[in-house]
Length: 456
Image 1: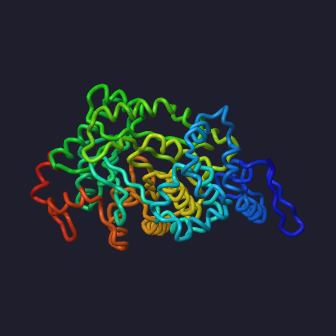
Image 2 (image 1 turned 45 degrees about the horizontal axis):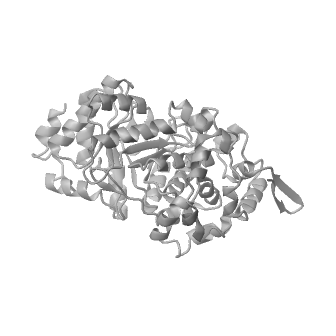
Image 3 (image 1 turned 180 degrees about the horizontal axis):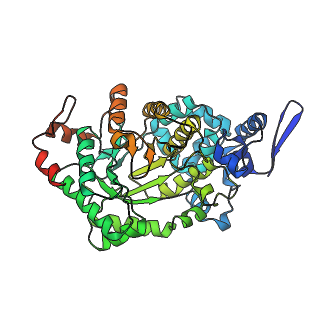
């Protein structure tokens, strides 16, 4: 079905929904690289106006990637909850934006609506929203998950403690864990990106984190971000695995490029649940995504990268994750060129994920060859804090020497908590108080020293 909108004497025509969504997207380098971006600002405005007039119901009758050829499309359509969708079924995309910004869109009504929204609906409405709109609506979305503690509660901001080491040196990892815990990081997860994706290395790192967690009685969860098949083998060998990690995307083809299928993710979730390691809940999956991954794998089917990113959230939603993280600037300037594009993408991803019912975190980050710097990251981090982001990264010095990119430091997380009156997860906060960790703490508390130093 074609769509059209006239501006002055020019009538702009868009051949189908896929093209309309792509042309309506605020400019980013990845869409230009893919050849799907609007050819001019005028064409983009025409597409946004045509999109604003489109009934939300239309997204249920036209898929951007055919149902017959894509497992993610089938998941989106087959899982759609018509009764949850009913309250907004009469609206256009523009009308939906107005409703989201109104007082009628309460945290309770947004939570009830989430199963009735498709990713394409969320992506579409985000394309006609300003940054302030994305912040205001996301701030109303409440998504709470539980494993050994509770994240996503109002007034809370969690931090992933990311103690990566280029050689998986246990001393380097342990030192970063000590540093992070002393600065209030780690309530989201203590999560290591392993230097090698072997079963033996994964088990060794899981045992390292779990030893620290048990000796210090820390109410948090651990994760080694190995491939899902590696995690399954680690589970078979009796490893102390809390959360199963996997990178995912918004098309069957990009997931194939990651070496995963939907049945494999279901198998991994069941394996993790069988361990029964959670104490306050059983949300056991951790997913990471990022705009541009489908294009980099030539698996985007001519769609814009933000729409494909939103479709990845349908995959995540299926498996009831504890954490979802968009690593927003990690892939590089070919996809998000500068600080302005990274900021827009981070707020879009957070908004779409929360709107679809996910516990969204954002790795506020950039690569060294992007046109961005730490001032850009400070601005995005603050906006996300106002928007109620579930968690952010905590990296020693904001510089991940293993993955070679710039993120946010333990101090950055503390600064946003202080500026916005945010607190850690409640169970973790109580643990910090028991251990004597808080404002003004300079030396390693006596209760922690033996356990933490023993990890090295």
